[in-house]
Length: 560
Ligand code: GLC
Image (cartoon, rainbow, N blue to C red):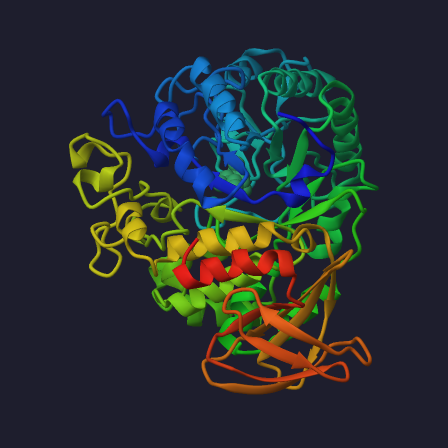
């Protein structure tokens, strides 16, 4: 696949775990052949990039983020040839494939860890990991999985020492001060890059180094290593992408772009919960606050924007007060709270209200950055808060109303996790087949919003500027790129809003047309006045004659 530079700015990414998508050998666990068999569905959604979560040999105590062998494929999912087929078949459909580099830690089942324990103290093999005899070291470093781990240190009987882990105690952190560890990481990256993947998500990247007296996060050493990794990538595998997972405040997050010499993309973690806050408070304030606080990023870089993913909806990057508000309003059930977050999917967070699900997606697809869609959210799949850890948002994809939602032919009790079967979100109602048949389904609407977005480079590449609405429940902004100017207007509240919006374009006169409904609004003297229905949103632009036919066509059909 041609690797034009900056391709990721026009990307729409679909996140999937091989395990969750489709099981073809009847063992109750999804496999590569299953994912390959559904590539047409993914392409038809309109996305152009797939992020495939870790598929390496692993005890799966952290869903594959606990890697026991970086250079192989978990046999449960298939063989390396199957991954190659996936890449080839995806590319044939103009879909790029991003995989994961989970380099902060390994599983405790990785042979490196067994070897480290046996190796003499002070040797390079011992020092693949971070050891101490004094667990008072690095005091005050926050614990990420606070519902599960009392400390970042765990005791190892064999060595009589403690080892460092920022996540579960079965995930010892690698020691990046060891040049041999670094060399291994380069080799791992080479191996998968040579296989033809289009980029890597860099899992848990802020935590590579430890230094006494610091938070052990975002250290200069970590940034220096990333620059090295990136320059190696650019030299050996030009055009490949780094997507950083750095759950930090905007200033710290933006540091992972470097001067355009670290990561190409980086999730905007602090924006995500504020989309939910703004909606529940019917107040654009939280979104304005965080975007105003977001630094300019290098022109060659891009934020990644998301609503949900495989983890809890993290509330680390909000104030205590906002976290409490989020918990009380989005997860009144204590069981849905985990660590500092909420383990629910988009549709349950939105009380299955299609208007709000669409509104959140309209924000996702128009805010500055590249959007990510979490598998299943495109059909409004539910979740199961009674499952362990974050498993409740990782249940099998629902394809039809048949056995196991069409995910697998296995005995239902053999599935890696049960399909969603509560009354409201039962898989017999919420599945791809049912959504295909219903012209008003979320799935059809998702295809439509994606196809509209793809007609305008402004969403992925354009400038972002707030327009000023006279009511705090109305959020409005321009996305502009070359001749494209799109005015997004969103009513965050559940009541009708009359609003006047100052477009920040003095004297601007035009007829603006909503890309969804065809509704027309006159802009006069740099202002529009309009009435917005509860949770209504508009993507307004001056009609482009060559697109009018297309848009009208879709309007008549009401679908993609
Ligand atoms: C990342 C992953 C998460 C995993 C953790 C530890 O945050 O998103 O699922 O548990 O890293 O690897």
